Image (cartoon, rainbow, N blue to C red; front, side, top):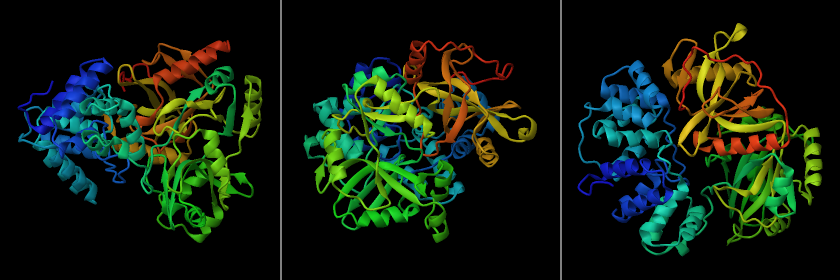
Length: 568
């Protein structure tokens, strides 16, 4: 447990190490509860947020967007080492935090540092507009910390503590510290999107006062992948509500009075990129919070995702682009209506209210089909496949909306052309016309049991030449170790990868391999925290096995003789 005589940041790091050292979720919760209970009011909300591996609360629109290159340069500057030394340390640890602790040993000038001091530096990094200034701010912070404290700064900046701690356990720790019901903490966290605020409410015994406020993003409800129609029907209770799985951008629309704000799946504001949706939203005669999908939609049909990408990141959309890539907002859920929070209402009631809004164009409602048997669900799926749709969203009509949770109320039905969200851990130079670019990507999923990334495949098809060229430069900037043909990279680029089947295999440290993997798209809207898990892979593999699909692992090029990261 943390030394009570240690400084605030040191106690935070010591608590993290104690949590890392136990596999027991109950013990992790106990350690967190004791730590939170001993904090003063100013430090409590910061500790809660930092233990979710974020510098700011979920609902806070400030994003550091601090690339690995800045972290690498700052660490090298403080330690007086070069990139090779950092890369060699990464091979020993496969964890940026552990690398920082090792490399900085004996090179910093520690002095007492509070969590508010750390928060102030994070705010400064956000405010600085040049890479040089951001790097200088990080150097100053690292230099005043012990290597152990700096280790946890690195973990927060890379968005993954890797100590077996998820947001749900942080919520349980807050509940234990305050002697509050865990479900009350979880509910307040859903509403506010700010675990720091929740920790303060719990300390004051005021969790029931938490309210959903418009104009800050709510965590999106997530869906779990499933391959088997029979299993889905059992989980949704005999009646399935089925929607197409749209190839667009998940969007959340907040409308209060005449003000309209759009948030994307990563909780960033994207209002300026979609002015026609905003203008239509202003005509809705209600205050609402809608969950849906932003789609490129022209001449009565959905356009490919890459066309929609032309609209992203723009502060001003030209009239020409508005005409070339018109956008629709396909609404499939209503979470708030005229002061009433609807999260705990069943989906069938939320849908009834949504249909009653009579939303103007370019709003559309998700097309809903009801299936009452596995055979009907398979028929709906086959029809979707005929429309070139890779899957379906299947929802239980009696399910509440659970922000940020990947439960069994919403399921993704995918067959044959299943997809996984993975993170790139290694890249290789291509062959032939691609010999000058990094075009072959080794990728991983997250193993919740070990708290590590485990490789599951390699893909080298699916991206355009322009995308590969752009990613080559980016991968160069986040390279951890260069072995010639193969580069170990900081795991932060998320891909959606399609494949035909999953097989057991000793080729990768996940124990599985994908048959004919190909890159469907770069998921710039997702972080490495949101990739699929090894449990999801195992579940999909069992589905393939139940269907008795007899497959032989293809003879594909491997990286024999080249070091492939075992823990990343």
